[in-house]
Length: 409
Ligand code: NDP
Ligand code: MG
Image 1 (tube, rainbow, N blue to C red):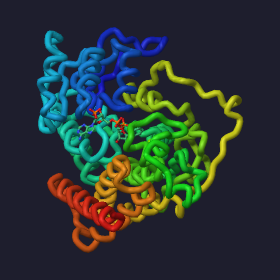
Image 2: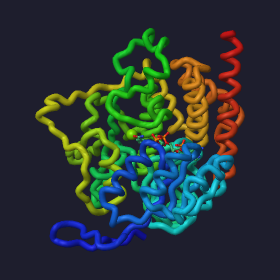
Image 3: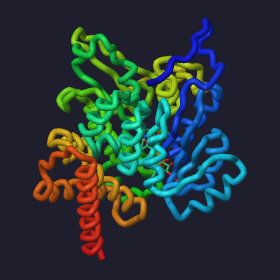
């Protein structure tokens, strides 16, 4: 599917657009970093579609900067606002969730899946069905759809290129000829803003504190997931599906400097890792240009200046979300689906001030417990079942949060 660029002795020659790209979630943190990478090699890419949910100004600006052919806003009430901002530019506009899914069916070489949450599932599946390779940032869609996602990708014969820095590192460290000799796969974790907090200190943390990640600049949902370490749990599930490896051979290692992003240990005792600055433009550039490497203006590692790299085991008592995710992975796709849905609702409630930080994992735990009795063991062959389970997880989480709110008042 991906066409090869013309290679010259000095690297890739960008005579004409060689890769058509659509960006879903273009106004977000990953979307903006993607635009930055594309604009550094403007001639190498033609942008077909850009989408957002409600940031209409950001979307219009992005569409113009990238010279996109179509801009789609998820919130249908913003159609007129988008049309006005793009009038006279020749850029087509559309609005509503169905229009986002439809736009994902437009033929392109690569779709950057950077919508946050399970909302990214249907557009990403539509892009897969249309035959696009996927640069996958939206880990939640893989967590909520499980094996079904991979089956769809295999049926369409498309490639899933991992944008998530840890998975991109592992992808870079995997030797195609030696996947059978992989012993263990490790994702590293910065440990987030509360790595050194006691449980007692965690009781009082605010959304503003939780949003302030020590190493990475990211959207609000993943920032909270990093603070609870649910993000690392989601990443274990993501790694399981991306690399077809069981939970018993997947490790998490806390590494506060965020220099080593992930590594693969082989049967002969070699461990192969990828290192890089904590800048998402590095894995994004890797995916956009894969299998080539293209010069990108990103910070370079200065290991002498960093001096020391440290590693420690995660503390499952202070970060129970990690165990919840690992348990869900063992229990099956229905459980990871419910875990993800409950977490999305709980994170939203925390950001709105409806629950406290420690209640995020507690809510997810309770929802998983209740869901075991009602939907436990559900297998899904269709997206409709995936979405029905997701809705059930959200409903149970809503009930749980309301129940806590009533108890507190
Ligand atoms: P942001 O919140 O910054 O951006 C999310 C994007 O999705 C925005 O364009 C937003 O539009 C759009 N969006 C939000 N809700 C919907 C919806 N219901 N339907 C359609 N579009 C929607 O998130 P990030 O860029 O941080 O993260 C995106 C994904 O990438 C997540 O899955 C995250 O886990 C993953 N990821 C992110 C990393 C990072 O460094 N940020 C690192 C690794 C993975 P609008 O702007 O209008 O709200
Ligand atoms: Mg990550």
